[in-house]
Amino acid sequence: MSGIHRKLFGTDGVRGQANVHPMTAEVALALGQAIAHVFRGRGSGRHRILIGKDTRLSGYMFEDALAAGICSMGVDVIHVGPMPTPALAFLTCDMRADAGVMITASHNPYQDNGIKFFGRDGFKLPDEIELRIEQLIESGELASWRAPADEVGRATRIDDVEGRYVVFLKNTFPRDITLDGIRVVLDCANGAAYKVGPTLLRELGAEVFALGVEPNGRNINDDCGSLHPQNTIGRLHEVRADVGIAVDGDADRVMIIDERGEVLDGDLVIALCARHLVDQDALGGGGVVTTVMSNMGLEEELNSMGLHMVRTQVGDRYVVEAMREGGYNLGGEQSGHVIFLDHTTTGDGLMTALQVLAIMAREGVPLSMLAAGFKRYPQVMENVSVVQKKPLEELSVLQDAIAEVETKLGGKGRVLIRYSGTELKARVMVEGQNEVEVREHVAHLIDVLEQELAR
Image 1: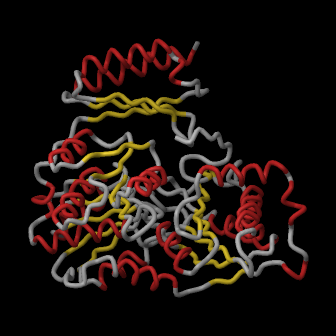
Image 2 (image 1 turned 90 degrees about the vertical axis):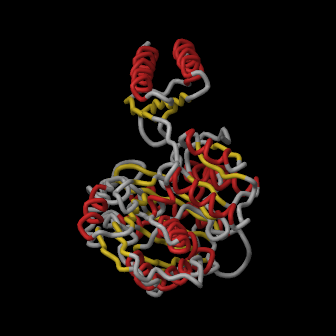
Image 3 (image 1 turned 30 degrees about the vertical axis):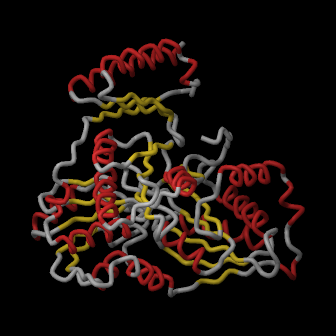
């Protein structure tokens, strides 16, 4: 962790309930001005910033506010409309834009929204630049840097971006393989992938049964998508499909379901892809990068292949930073963000699905057989509402309780307690060999935490 304290930015951009601070039109306008000012100082000539969004009702409000702020600083805006977050990252780099802005709250309900930024290289901004943006907004200096009337930026909209992204994804799929004869249930969560997802798979030859492709501004992630794979599972059984794919609202994460209806989370997908890359002599860094949330079963699976695992704090951008620093080309999160750094700069649900489908097609066996043998430790996590976030390391009774639990686990388990980056909640997670005991440990630690925070 960088140690930098930011007020607006959380784990992944600015996020909150739409029309409630910090997710207001006023803040969005200021963010637009700040990002334009930061990137306007880089190089000469006209500067351009892309704006994309998912399908939330409030997206219209925020894209207009951001565009107004950016244009007021003399920087041009290109609207690309509803597109997956990884598509916005790709397009920012592909179109040689100075930066990209994505309006999304990912897997959250439609009432929430968020704003995240990408640099011209397609990577998310580091903490230092996010802090600089906050300082610019707080200082009140932006008003003095507005462009004169004859240099105000202009906003345009382009309509061919879906095709560009589909072509990009298809180029990550082996050219000697098709998906002919493979039946796929695809749940797009009524979100940003509702057009590109079905198009992509059909162009590669799959028979696609699409769900969650009728967004209305309010139904994004509503009992659908990666957080609610039961719809995909039900449809998979109904049509006897070979595989199910469920992405979230901005399609940067995915859950994959085998032909039996069993869910493969990010950990299992990473293990599967790591094994394939090792067989192809194409895995960089001698291991993979994951977060503190990844299951110990993944670590053991990687060790059995002679690989190591690097853990980072929660957040796919921290995974990416560690991958770039250590020369790794595969990493991700248990939640379904998987990053293939040879192809992209951020988690991409559709690309991840393509990599798994390619392995299935090449091996010619059911997905359940490819996933067989993966051992998962029972892992229980509970969220605890808090009124304040006292430093956990200063809660001595809690630290003693954690040490006691870890001793009982005997090296065959883990304890992780952390605060949410976006909510007034603490997350208490215990992993071990016996689920009943794990649940007892979680309940005990929650009791201790609540007593400590109540003092």
